[in-house]
Length: 133
Image (cartoon, rainbow, N blue to C red; front, side):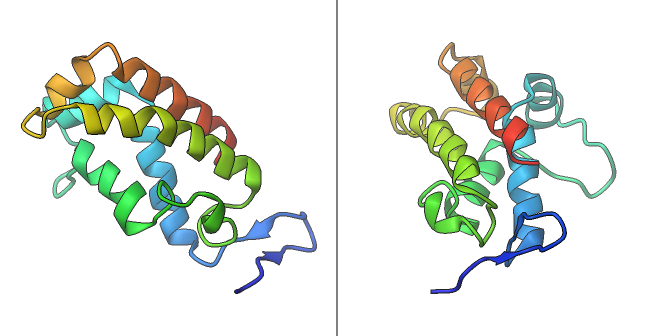
């Protein structure tokens, strides 16, 4: 098991995969912003040519690509810097998992983000963004 390195100057954990961390932060920001979700995921108004984003992309990134949703504490030193970051990810997953498991697979992004339960995901993602930056 690798031990996370501490930056002696500022006392923060240096993660092994900073680019993956940036992707996690981007996904959290997308999940935390209902206006972005409507504009990009539903209306497909992208910020620049060649850009693409949707709910599935962000879910896959958190669960499959980085495993930060599957094992947040195991990602400390990998893509997360602290147990505090892992704890907010765990809270996000606690509201996201039942929602994803309870929705029919054929729902599109507009239908998912229109559900009343989606507000809990947005709130948990906003909390995560405040901690993970």
